[in-house]
Picture (cartoon, rainbow, N blue to C red):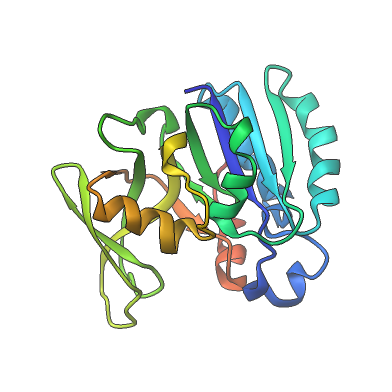
Length: 226
């Protein structure tokens, strides 16, 4: 795979006033927009193309791209802007003609530090999810993994002490995307799981999502690629 697709359209309503004028992936983390760290990670992992799926305040993302690409001269960046909020799966469907046959997909609000090239996609799976064991797991949906196949997805449970969670990085086949689905997490992945086409692999690198003020604050202390 050479293409890294980044979901950067979310507003981040749980961040409150912080996200009123700035998209969640553009929030400052360790002195730079969070999206800049994902760019550096993609370049470090050997990806040559980035497709950004933008929505809320897309002009801020576009302005960022204009300056950030100069830091990575070997990286080609394309922007796809959804005309209205379409959800994660809807944004992928909107950009379907720009997707490679197989690509890496990354949540624009998640940092999962492992070698992204190690997440591969073997037949017959149409998607493979990078999984992280966390404790507690009360904030997250969890999965059951059996011989490399995700066989069940469990909803969030405030009482769950630990579990394997979706780390927000995926190897995907373009055929996984179907019309009529708006949520990757609530529609696409459950469908693939039910069809036996959803793989998973556990990684143990540093993990954080910046969707809450406290996790955004915690992310300031992480180490990121130069």
